[in-house]
Length: 163
Image (cartoon, rainbow, N blue to C red; front, side, top):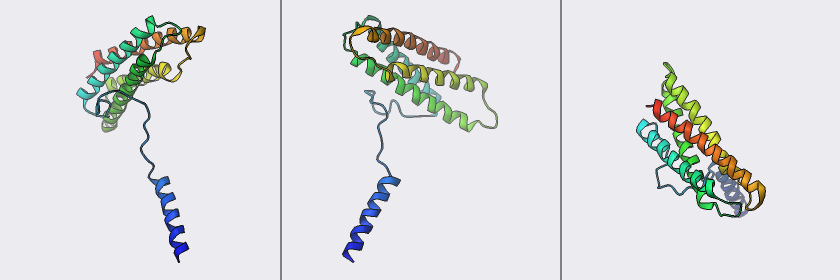
């Protein structure tokens, strides 16, 4: 009987771990709590886009002057924060879109396309960091600056057309 209880407890524990996994942190962020929380409120989404632009500009400014041996940890964190904010804004717009299935908003569709493109573009500097030193780092910095610039342009276009 005791063996049965122990086995049952082990099976129940294993099932609980498989069915109810612990929350996983996707991206390290230094943003204030709640800033990157997904919302379907246009005011919140616009604020997230504005903050993302500021974080992307901060990262870009540092990358523009960084050398092959400079630490870019702080700038890389700003890029990561921008990525997180863009993702939250994108998910918020997707939530708005889901409520407008009967009569889709064409401007919202363009906004979502631009957010998707900006989100994918902002991933480059975050996901593909090159080690310090050498030509590969300088190439990474140059490509990243271009990607930051393109991301910022797309986000600014969104602010001009929406909401």
